[in-house]
Image 1 (spheres, rainbow, N blue to C red):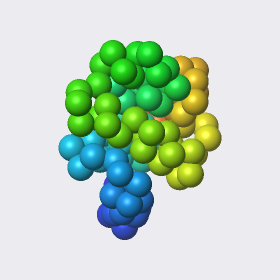
Image 2: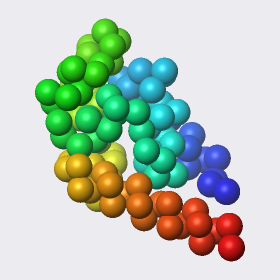
Image 3: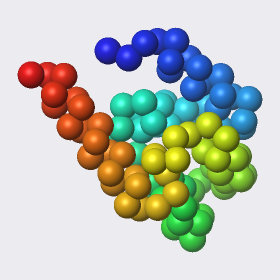
Image 4: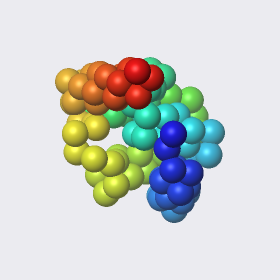
Length: 102
C-alpha cells in the first residue's frame, strides 16, 4: 500500500505544472506503482516527440511542454528519458509488486 500523502504530493506537483487532470491518475500509476502507461504517455516518458504528437489528443497536445518540464523537475531520472529506462522502471516495479504478494 502506498502512502496517500505520496500520491497527493505528486498530484499537487502536476496541478501546479499544468498536467491535465484527466492524465494525473495515469502519471501516478506509472511513477508510483510502475504500471505501463497508455501509448501517448509512454511516448512522452520515452522522449519520443514524434510518437507523442501522433498519439495525443488536443488537450494533451497543448500541454506537451508541461509534461517535459514536470518530468525534468520532479520525476526520478531512472523513470523516463529513453524507452529502455521506461521498460526497466516498469519491470522493477512489477518485481516489487510480485515480492509484496508473497
